Amino acid sequence: MCMEYNDIRALLEKYWACETTEAEEAQLRLFYAEHEDALPVDLMEAAPLFRYFHAEGEMPMPELFTDVPAPWEHPESAKIIRPFWHHWMKYAAVLLLAVGVGYSVTKFQHKHAGGNNPELAFRDTFDDPKIAYQETQRALQLISKHLNKGKTEMEKLSYFSEAQEIVQGGHN
Amino acid sequence: MSSEVFLNQIMPIKQKLFRFALHLLGNEEDAKDIIQDAFVKVWHNKEKMGELQNLEAWCMRITRNLALDKLKSKKYRITDDLDRAQEVPAAHQHTPHQQAERSDLMRRVHGLIRGLPEKYRTILQLRDIDGLSYQEIAEVLHIEMSEVKVNLHRARKQVREQLQNLHVYGIQ
Image 1 (cartoon, rainbow over the protein chains, first blue to last red):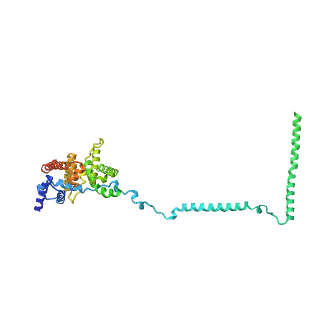
Image 2 (cartoon, each protein chain N blue to C red):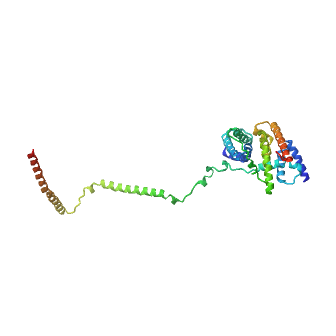
Image 3 (tube, chains in turn red, blue):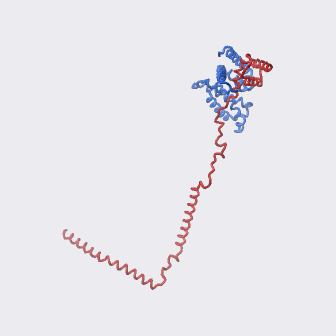
């Protein structure tokens, strides 16, 4: 122990004369950090200084902005994986679009085929010409019968208008 | 300089840079700001990296210049937070009385070193806390090695005188 103290004394003298190496100074710091109590009086003088140096060297480092990983450093962790059924609206929209397109295509084809077929446009709608003739006659008679129905009413109206003209003429 | 070189060579010395800035400014938040500014500045000057021999010394010089600029700015007021000295981690468990005594002593040493002229204080810190060689200190401060030795000798002499007062008379 005495030997160690003598070494430290010698190192201290070198230290104050600025003749110590970095390793020797590190040794001094370590010695004082490890020997907290019961040192000879002459060695106590430099104790607070070396303990201070040692403690400052061990000072914890606060967190800096550079310690926080940038968002692009871990792209995997940022990626959110959802099951495919979470995108149901996407699939519904595609399905709806497909149904709409399919419907309009069939509709167009149907219309196009019907308009371009002259046989279908001029085809007769009867089987027996005699019955067709009778049916036509009956329909026309029904029209003429109802047409004459309103005619008498119109005649009455014309009487009125004539009378009105006469009256107006008389006044004038 | 790629980001890999930055991460492998610059980031490992951030604690040293932080400690350096903290001792110059005496305030943890400002020291953090300065370190972050220094990293940005280093990154912007990455073209110069190839020409440099000692990246660490260059980073420390940038940190020191930024810290001194901040100190010079009119708005800046040195807040020598005495409470911070009590945050110095204790190496062993002590009784509350011993802890208080120790904190008080650490605070006094802290105040004693902060009372030194800036140049002395910086050299003392770079040598005794950060463990830099004379050559490295000369590179950081951009001065001659002989000047480093002379200033370190004067700084230690001044510290020793004050420590003797502290030890013998209990005054600072």
